[in-house]
Length: 123
Image 1: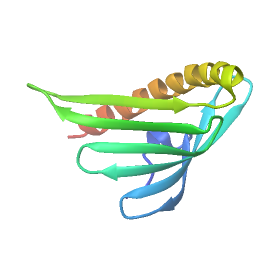
Image 2: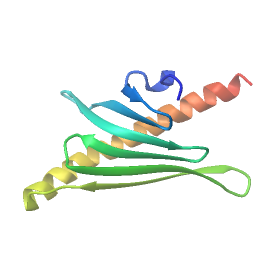
Image 3: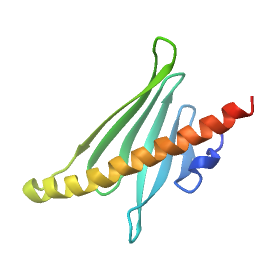
Image 4: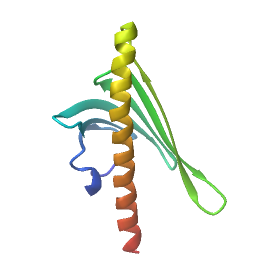
């Protein structure tokens, strides 16, 4: 696993690296402050990356990004699951967190796209 891509340097810090997994701290701007989450990120080359929340605003988050070959292109598929506890209060908090989480995923995908296009233009 190499260094953090330039497009993501302000959004994450790798705490520990393994052969196919990192423990990473993610920073998300949510308006008045920046939240910090700690996640494991498992790489399954060439087509899949899995995330699992270790510490964050809710007790459970798992996500998966997968590249799939299509007719004349490659498609990126995303799936995620967010879980809460504490009944109605947890459901309300989960809705608040989910909106911010989805915006953060969109922003990260935009950054990855920008970096991929930058690298492709050098070829």
